Structures are given as C-alpha cells and as structure tokens.
Image (cartoon, rainbow, N blue to C red):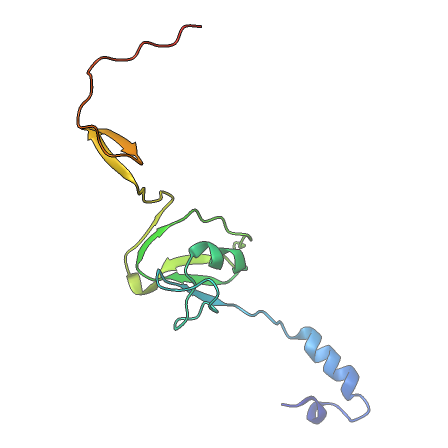
Length: 137
C-alpha cells in the first residue's frame, strides 16, 4: 500500500522514512559458474562465470553459488565470510558432478624413463643407471 494512503499528506515524508527504516532490505544473490562461462559475464544461469573464485570474490552472506558439472582447476578463497544465520553456500547445480582441483594440467613433458619425465626436449630413451655423486661441501 502506498505511503500516501497510510499517512496524511503533511506527514507522508516522515511516515515514509519510518516505514523504509523498518523494512529490511536484504538482497540475496545466486551466482552460477560453468567451465564454458566467462568471468566477464553477469553470473546468471544463461551467462555463468567461468571460475568459482570469481563468484567467491562477489558472494556476500546469504548468497548461493551454484557450480555446473566439470573440473575446476583453481584454488578458491572467498573474499567474505558468511554468518551462522546467513552462510555463503557453494553447491553443485542439480547434483551435477563437480571436481575442484588445485592442480594444473602439465603440458610439454615427455617420458624419459619409467617414472622420469623431462620438459622441453625429446626423450633420450636411455639412462646410464649410475647415480650422480652428491656435491662435496
């Protein structure tokens, strides 16, 4: 109901201020994240963020971050804390399988010998079998 109908015309400004002061204004957000998203997107279901960290940087107490299925190779450090009555909730979207791994995929490595890898050069295909002596001090 508009304020003018509750209060007299002369009191309407004061009355409106009191009503607005009593009305709690908590805007809760739901952010979406997808491996095919973009951190320049608004974080909606149709235009999700690309990283969980981007959503974690924006999330406030009471907000929810829904993560679409896939593997996210990142470390997540929320910028804000939730509260016991208004936690920040991170969960998978519709129970899709989500993996958060702080490990990056390594590229440019090749096998030199079983369990020995080299980077940036072709494998020699052999090892001498003799361990190197430790340097003397």
